Image (cartoon, rainbow, N blue to C red; front, side, top):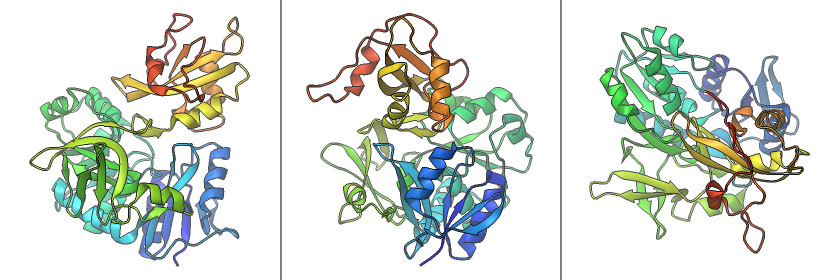
Amino acid sequence: MPALVAVLLPPSAAAGVIADAWAAGEAVLPLDPAAPEPELRARLAALRPTHLVDAGGRSARPDGVPAPEGVGAVVATSGTTGAPKGVELTAAGIRASALASSAALGTREGDRWLACLPMHGVAVLAVLARAMHTGLPLTVHDRFDAERVLAEADVTVVSLVPTTLARLLRAGADAYPRLVLLGGAPVPAGLVERAAAQGITVVTSYGLTETFGGVVLDRRPIEGAELALDDAGQILVRGPMVMRGYAGDAEATKLALDADGWLATGDLGILEPDGRLRVTGRLRDLVICGGLNVVPDEVEAVLRQHPGVADVGVAGLPDPEWGERVVAWVVPADPADPPTLAALRDFAGERMARAKAPSELVLVGALPRNGGGKLLRRALPGLKGLQAGPWKVAGGR
């Protein structure tokens, strides 16, 4: 069975390590080097890589477990409870996805990919795979910087989320990359048209970590991917790029994958007569903020630990820049001295990735719950706050 190599490096360094591991037949587990120490420990404890590559080099981990035969990557993600899970993606599926998506995009000789988003996310891992399997060159930035992206004269293809594409357009330039693969979050109205006016071809993408990213491009499935809907209108996906399962979690795997290989995505959609997919909503409560998946349960569990919080509910609201923003409805322990948004963000940022912290706070007297005490999350946006005020983070999340 292949070694499972955890990579804890900035993207520019991680790319080469991942490529070398794949060439050696190893499986990779990309991790976020900016994540708080408790989150990293949880990931390592749950997924048990055999090796770790960080700034100090490569080291073996005595409690590590090799990846199952044929697995090429394990990507850490959060389930509905916020507990870390590992999505097992096969090497054959990674290759099939890379070739099929490249063909659908129409990449060609002379193109150069740019990766400028976090390497621990499946979208950039997919960019690396496309470059490797098609032989196209790749430039890697450690973070998104619009001016630096525009300075890369040789770059022709880049994968972005709506937030970063909007920033690229605001930066202004005489020339842009010819092709942008856009996914990871709802696309604000008019964004694709604004890009087209600057000569950029935008290809929208739909996919999940469990499908190795984009499995539907411009609303059509890539080669080898099948789409269907269940009786509830939930989108189902089948194909070689679909995950093998969740590492060490047979129960979660069984809930997600049926005996015929169909993956239940948790998203709702409509399949039009010509085979195009229209995503209409989701069954799950996941908040997608600037391409980052935020599990409300995970944020709630952290905020409940704050001494000023008696109760809390978290959900997403539409946002013109981020697609969705994370909002916390908080019942203060002391209504005369409620916690501030800044205090809650700092508290959360010490215990989880700061980007998951709420960017808006609404103070309320009580949360909507059913007779069994379950939070009625969809009723949160209708709650009236105890106080009026500028409870949002300006220009950020």
